[in-house]
Length: 221
Image (cartoon, rainbow, N blue to C red; front, side, top):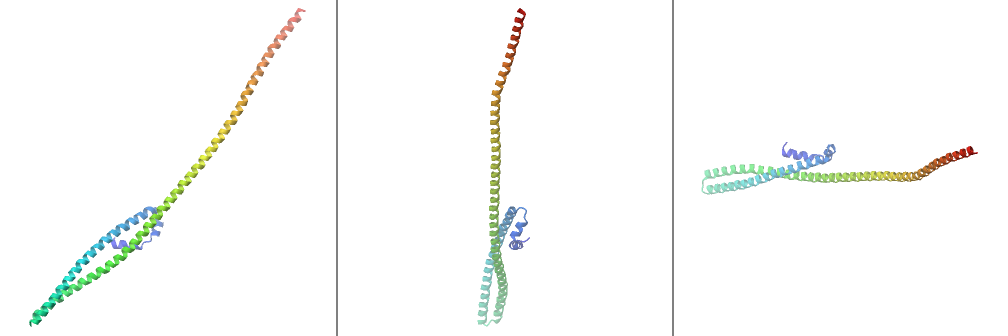
């Protein structure tokens, strides 16, 4: 695709429609901006060549007109000397130079029109580039905003989880305290139970001894 055709396609393109269809708008806008900047560089380089060619053509035109005027002066001199033949030949040279100058003027006029068109299209392309950069900036701001919102939500979720775990830890601690209290109560009860059992065993021994003593006294009567 030629540079000028490519530039026309860019100028006539709808950035919003392109970005809406893009899978990755941020990447797409970077490629569009790169394409525009490269096209601007090429167009300006082409414009510079046209301007240089135009200046060269203008110098050539000035030289042709100067030569044509010189031949007209020679024709006048020849005619003043009654040399109509030389005057006619000089005028023929002048006519040839004027014809060449006319072609050169046509080329200069075409170059002027081309430069005017390029200037207008470059201005449109520059405006389009500025618009693309503004959209890129907006996309970056939007992306940054979304990322910030995601980080905030992640932080909030993390805080909620931390709070939930803290509640579980508090509950576990409370249950540990209650179980500790219960075990402490059981420790006292275990000691009383052991003492009661020991007392029963001691009472049984005394009863056995008392029974033996009674039996012994009965035999002695």
